[in-house]
Image (cartoon, rainbow, N blue to C red):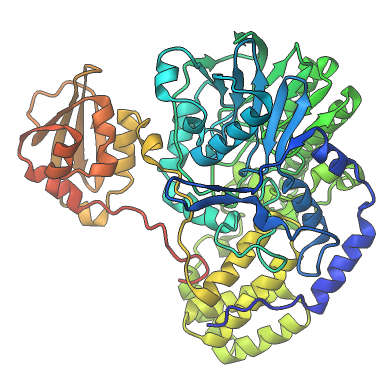
Length: 630
C-alpha cells in the first residue's frame, strides 16, 4: 500500500489563501504572552523512560517556523507554533510553569518551605523532567503539596514523578482535589478506557509522523506523552466554592466547577499573588462539549455559568490568569475580557442550539448553519483548535435529544457494512462509485467523496482504488482543518488505510489507576467484559470477603449479567474469595484464575471451577479495533 503523503490540492490551497487574508495574523499579542517570562528551555526537548525509550519529544515540532505551508490550515499552524513554545516560565514572582513537556502544563507555586505542584502532566517521566528543570533554576525545593484541578489523566498521571506515596502517607505532601475526583478519574480510564484509548490515538495523532504533511499539534497541546501513568489518591478534598486552604504557607480559595470541562473540576485563586488558575475551563481555544475520543457529554450551560461566577468571585482581585494548557493572560481588564469571551462562547453554543432545536432543527443542521458572533469569530481564543463549533453543536443536540433526530427513516438504519453494500449496488457497483467519487475529489467536494468512498470500503474492504482514494480524501480534509483533533483524525485515517492499524500508543488504564478501583467499580469493570450471549446459560455465585474493610459481597452471574450485592445471603456461594481491598484490585492484572488469585494473595474456598467458568465468558476489549474499515 502507498504511504507517501500527497500535496495539497487546489481547493485546499485556495481555502488556505482565503484564511490568510481573512484572519488577523498581524495580531502578535498571543506570541508575546506565550514567550513572556521565559527562564530556560529544556535542551534537548526530549524525555525518555528508564529503558531509554522516548516518551516525549518537543523538538520534533521544530519545523513550525515561518509561514504555514499549504498542507496546514494557517490558523492551526499559528496555534501550533504557540503551543510548541517549551520551557520554564515565570507567571508572577513565586508562580512558575513548565510548558511544552506534555499535552498539559505543570505549575509550581513556591511556599514557605517547598513548592506546590498543580497538575503533574500525564507521565511520571515528563513530570520528573519538568520538576528537574524548575529545580535547576529555582533551587532544590521539596514538593510540599500536589493539586489536581480535575479528573483527566493529563492532570494527574505524572504524580509519582514529583512526589511519592510515602511522602503523601507521612503527611509531608498533601494531595488536594475536587470532590468526586478519584471516582471519575478511575472510571473514565477503565470502563470505556479501551475504546477511548484507541480513539485517542486518532485524536492526538500519536502515531503520525511530525511535519507539515503529518502531525502539527492537537490545538490544546501538541500530543500526549507515552510514559508511565500513576495516581495517588487525594488526602484533602475540596467540596464547596469559597473553601480556603493554606498549604506550606500558600493561601488558596477554591471555586467548584463540576460538570464543566470535567465532571469533577475546580478553579484556584491565590490571593497573595493576585493570580487565578482557571484549570481547563478557560483556555486559548474553544474546548469540547464532547471529545472525539468519546466521553459523557459536557454541560455548556453549567460551564458558562461557572465562568460568570469566576468573574464575580475573582475578577477584581486577579492580575493574571493561567491555565493547565496554553499561556497566561496578564492585566485585570484583559483577564476579565478573556473570561467573558470564554463564558459567552459556551453560553452561545448552548442557548442557540436549544433555540434551533425547538424550531425542529437537527444537530447536523444546526452545526452546518449556526455561525459565531463576529466578536467571538475574531477572537483567537474562541477558535475551534481542540473543540469545534461543528461537533460541539452536535454534542449539545445529543445532550438534550439523544442520537435520534425524529425522522423515522433514521430509526432503524442498516449498520455500515450492510448500508455500504446497498449504496454501492444502487450506485452501479464499486468501480462506478470510485469513478464518481474521483470526480467529486477533483472538484474539491471532499466531504461527499469521503462519504461515498467509506460506503465502498465497508462494502468491500479490499477494493484498492477505493481505499487509496479515501486515504487521499481524508488527507485533503486534514490539510484544510483548523481543528487540531480533526486534522489528526483525518490523517490517522489516511495512515491506517495506507499502512495498516497502529493500535493504542498511550495506555491510561495503568496498574496505578486500576489500583484505585473501589470493590464495586472493580465488579463493574468485570461485568462490562461478560460476553452476554456466551453466558446466557451460565449460573454461578461468588462471595467476596474483604477483611480489612469488613465488607462482604455476593456476585451472581445469570442471564449474561454479573450483578453484585452486599446483603446477607442464607445460601452458600459456589466459591468464596477472601482478600484485602488492595489485593482485590490486582485481579485485573493477575486474572481471575486460581493461579492469578494466588499470585494476588487471594484465598479460595469452595468450587474453584466457578472461577474458570466465569473466566471462560470474559471478553476483554481490543485496543487495536478497526475504525475506518469494517
